[in-house]
Amino acid sequence: MKKRIQFSLVYRDMWQSSGKFQPRKDQLERIAPVIIDMGCFARVETNGGAFEQVNLLAGENPNAAVRAFCKPFNEVGIKTHMLDRGLNALRMYPVPDDVRRLMYRVKHAQGVDIPRIFCGLNDVRNIIPSIKWAAEAGMTPQGTLCITTSPIHTVEYYSNIADQLIEAGAPEICLKDMAGIGQPAMLGALTKAIKTKHPDIIIQYHGHSGPGLSMASILEVCNNGADIIDTAIEPLSWGKVHPDIISVQSMLKNEGFDVPEINMNAYMQARSLTQEFIDEWLGYFINPANKHMSSLLLGCGLPGGMMGSMMADMGGIRNVINGILRGKGEKELSMDDMLVKLFDEVAYVWPRVGYPPLVTPFSQYVKNIALMNLLTLTQGKGRFVMMDDSMWGMILGKSGKVPGTIDPELIALAEKQGRKFTDDDPHTLLPDALDGFREEMQKNGWEAGPDDEELFELAMHPEQYRNYKSGQAKKNFLVDLQKAKDARLGSQLTPEQLAALKHAKADAIVAPLGGHLYYEFGGASECAPCLEPFIGQHYKEGDTFCYIQAKWGEIVPVPSDLGGKLVEVTARQGANVRRGDILGWIERDKD
Figure (cartoon, rainbow, N blue to C red):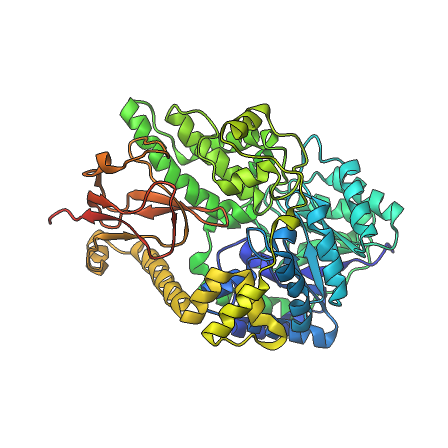
């Protein structure tokens, strides 16, 4: 018999790759014992990137959820692990050193054993400090390689990074195939190269199912020395998520590996509970497209976890583009036309911005550049016109060094705009911040919590935590949930029934979230000094009024509600708006 292979259940990532929110604390407490009863998991992913932020957005305390979910696994010796975005820690933008250092102390105290530390650029400067801080806190740091397929992402490239992470103290290496486009043969060769040089290093493989290569990749890495495989369970396995534990176990068992047996009664119970969570409320925020696999992902390399938000972004921009095409008397684009154009544009942009592995947040940045390029090309303005500071930060080196070289066109554009490239270690560019957050907590009379976990939460997710403490987050969440329920109900009603459900007409267009504001008034430049000429423009119900680019990269269309005539614009193009800000006023058409 071949070597023993262990399995990990990526319960957090199952949800993130399917929809917006995570299960509540009480739901996690219910399913944890059932996962244990399945008897096949040596590890469970309990929290990490996005988990805590979306819990706050739902008005839930993530610290309580993490402690409750980890506790039963800790008691039976199942290791828990979390996703850690290196320089970005648990959010989409950089985190100061003192906040990152505190994170490992907090997470260890909460019962998390292993942080999976990655950098979207594979820049070891963003990973090595975290390896040291995690070890100091008593955790087992797992150095991570973000896998993609490009001319520069070779076995030698990745092996060199693994050598540096192991030398820095990482006893484990994760091959994070976040888009599932890693070629099986390359992954097998990489696994063998690391194991040959470092036979005692544990290798864990994490591969999404999106384009359909994951099962072949699992077989290759196992045959070349991998130790642990990430898996999912129905009803959230496959699609853009991960292969199901039953199929993975069957394949490896038939190959002659020593694998644990699955308690199928417990599997069916976990499956039923997960479906119950979906039916209760989480399913309202799951994009049905994320349940499907697509070989188109091989060409663009975008991760499956962001496909839902990408389709929403693309739909909004398509409406604007089609409006421009109609004005020119040209053929409009279908969603399929738009999808192919976007994937082709990603393929154009990606090498020119230095081949960053397409994982959060860089997948969002590259996708957004490509999407904005399609818009500005249609307007006749050319490419790389609408890029914010986050996109430029990736290009300029503020987030780390990109693996490839930046295109001369972008270098010249940066120089023209007075932007400076940097080789500085990214984490040295950020001043410590904890003292300021301590003062804020004291001023508000907030407790720092056990092991300073509440202080950490404020410092990691300031905006979301403040909304959570004020109760605004819960109110916003309940409104969003009701809208989602109404939308699903509306799809089942006649037009007359749907009209009867509409609430009173409102004139103010309000920002649903914070971020940078973009208008598209008849092709107006983002630098338009004055928007008054567009007063009087008419909107139909549901038309897009503007777009807000969130801090985490998602481009969210803001609807014009019930439509009417634009009478005032109260926020400038490119403004940094907050949730709840009034963006403009629309005079309703008379019935």
